[in-house]
Image 1 (cartoon, rainbow, N blue to C red):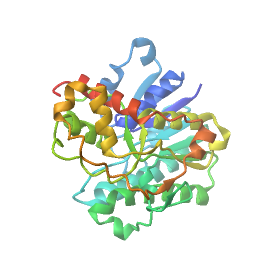
Image 2: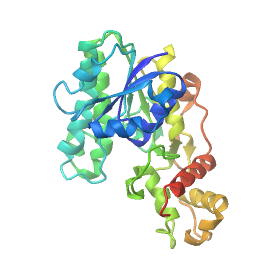
Image 3: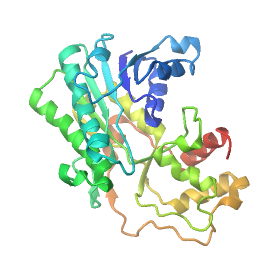
Length: 330
């Protein structure tokens, strides 16, 4: 079993990565931003499981040497870096998104090289946003957004993900560290919420579309899908943890997606699985918007190397809605 440093644990994907790590018997040190967040995390697990979790505070990932103390907290075997900023429309794209994303990715690699000779693998959560170019989508493709273009708030997120991942691979090329790097690139991520939410306003960005559907915010029309690829969060977490031990995952990039979908299909699944919500849903007469010439993708690498067996959209939507209903006030 491995000793793992995990960043971004309090996020939607990070919470599932932690659960997957613990289910596999690994020991985890979770980087959190405050002592309170650390205490809240430990209270969510039984005493037997909590014995394999500890926390360490990393207040600001953009600071020079931000991860140095965390990386020296234990003789780690693996580092999983899941922390990265996201804003739909950042007030200051450079300070809110670009610098934290790039500095966070490079900073953690620098700290591992300087202070953690025991680490054999670093796994970074990237994004399909680093790949997307609306043509053919594989691990060989990068989005074309430049740093200058990413200063436009509308392009800041795809720019930040692309530039951060590129910077990580450049570090590996230039510094030639003793550890290997793996990056995981998911599109829209649906699936059950693992964290308690104080409010449904705090649901992760992808699941907010499902939240709004079940709250009746789209009763007159199905919202545009925009991005036609999706994946279940449990499969994303599985891919990260699989990458720990599989030799062929070293220094590789993985697109993790279950395939195409559109919002009409999501609405119909909710209608069939949760008939009590049907009055809030758009009319069945409304059409979906999946283009007949929708862009292609290739997820065979994640299936063949990491062994990911993707959840169906029905299972993912059903489990997502169930956890949102459990949160109350729906």
